[in-house]
Every structure is written in C-alpha cells, then in structure tokens.
Length: 277
Image (tube, rainbow, N blue to C red; front, side, top):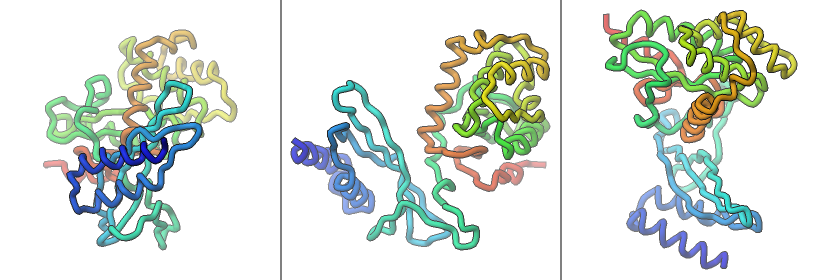
C-alpha cells in the first residue's frame, strides 16, 4: 500500500511539474523519498509554496515546502511546513552565519500574499497609500515594544504614503500574551483608539500566568472595564485565529516580522527609504 501510495504521489508531482528538468522537480522527488508514511499518518501531498535566491550564497536557493498528512484513524489532516536550502546537487536544512554564529533560516519567508491584507488589521495610514507595511508582533516581546510604536508614529505622520497592517502573533514563550491580544481586540471593538501603541509603550511583563492580573493592568492603562468572559467572544477568537493562520502560511517563528510591499524586511528599516519628501 505504501509503495502504491508513493507511486501515485510521484505521478501527481510529475503532472504538476510537467516533467520539467528543473531544480523544483529535484526537490519534489527528494521530498517524496524523504517523507515516508507511518502507522500514525499518510502522506497526502507535497508541494512547494515558493522559493527565493540566497543573495549571500550565490547559486543557492531556499525552498518553502508544505507536506499535507492524513492522521490514521482520526479523520484529521495536518500540514507541516519547512524551509530547505539547495544548490541543485545537495540539500541542507540550515546555514549558520560564520560572523554572528546564528541560523539564517528565520531570515526567509514566503512573500506576503496580497489576499492577507484585511481592513480589520489596519492600525494606521490610508487604504490608498502607495506603500503597504505588514507587521507581525507579540505585545509582550521586548524587541516589539521598542519597534512597533516607532513604526506606528512614522505611518501616522505619512498616512498618504504608508498604511500599516498589524497581525497578532502571541509567542508560546509568553503565556499571558493571548489574553493581552484578546483584550486589545475587545477594546478596539468598543471603539477605543490607538490601543496597540498604548500597550506597546507599557511593559507587560509577568512572571506567572495570571490572566486576571494582565486584564486588570490592561483595563487601568486603556480605561476599559473588560472581564475575562468578554475576551472569549467568537469574533475576537476568530480574528486571532485568522492572524495565526497567516503566520503559519508565512512560516514565521519569531517577532517582530515586517513585510514591506509583500517582501520580508529583516532589517526592519527599509520602509524609511521609501519616504518621498
């Protein structure tokens, strides 16, 4: 059965690539051999979500891959995403920068799909602005706290040239972050303005997971009287889940992340160069 399944998968992959003699075909063949069915799951599909040249390593590319799996006996499917690097002859999971001694894997992401732009995520600027900024952030991330207010102020000063979309990305290392995210959404629903900027200018740093303490602190800061029950409204949960689906699609695993006109900007400064005086 496993052998037949792999053969069918290879046929599907071959049709999709039209037997093109390309690096994409090599990658798909490599993945079909590397990802095997087990007692727990079956391989449903393997695809390439995108690719980019690695400017710092001539001749190498990063491929964004997706593996769809059917969980055996659970009537459920999951998608696993990853990034792999290749020069067409060899494959590696990552590179480490010899100067910074850091992985370069997190420096890459698929391009921001224009369908991800949504009015509900706009926090500054005009919808007809020339340049679109999309930021993914955690309100308890120290780097985000210093970064986001600056971007917001910049866009507010130049609303005709820039529009800023904000996507919630509470990290697992901050167990209180989801509560704070839901409080932000609930306050905005009530009509409170500049909630994100006010929250990021405050320091929300709690040693233990105490949702009530987080909300009490938020209420005092913003002037709301929200309860924990009010944070569980369906539209608030759906908004946060929608943002997290975009995080998964873009294969992000850290904050802050900034996209400038659909391209990931690891420097988080390129938008300033687009300003027309």
